[in-house]
Length: 344
Image (cartoon, rainbow, N blue to C red; front, side, top):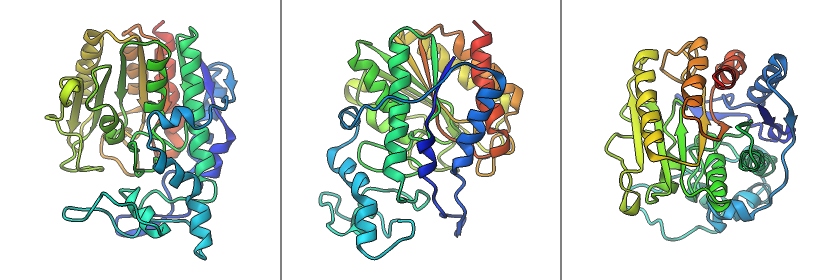
């Protein structure tokens, strides 16, 4: 299996995030991708390739232009206001506040285009995020050209980003961008399977009213877990997309038995849908020792995840999302890929 990877991910290197009522060192750090690529090479998974450059057009097919303009220019606007530290938002739109006007000031824009204070914008954010999208698009192109599966080692991750706001460590929705590229290259139907511990709220929102993309997500129950306000079972799509969104929320402490049962059901749903391509939002923060998650999967379980995905027999793009038990992230992520490869 080919892996797409770029050193540009290192340019997103935030100093702190607001979590547990404190400003703490960021859990989403460059070392995450470094450990995964080292494991890819250690096990001889396959060739490691740099991404092609696709520019803004494929991003604009998923994200709104004013949002992309904001991300591209945010650091310059922030430093022009006299700051040389990471940029974090000040307020958020909540019930009763207007959402129809984009502020002019950088503080207002940060608040307008974000939903949490755990996702710092730095000097290298745009370059890292756009490079991650290129990583996803390069993987999609290779799968579209006939590769059985490709691993796009994206960082920063993407599944929390919607068409016009960022958060949850995510700026551009890499999986959604790749999915749209599959559609535009001829796939009539595409399925997305999100196995990250946190609900892929951004991906769900982007495709919620579309029947050409089936979205299935296994995640921590939103009554307990970030991002809290999406991911319930009754969110099944809207309009033409009704019936093409499936959430499998699980409560804290869930282990392999309930998690794998949910995965089996999601795979059955995907098989019945009959997609021409499958995109996996590959988060491994379901691991028992992940510092910000509450599931109890163990490293051998990730081999089984890969085997179950392989049984679908679909051209598959793996897009890296979360996973913060840094020492184990390489083993767990690559175990999914090894399980997939070994299943033939």
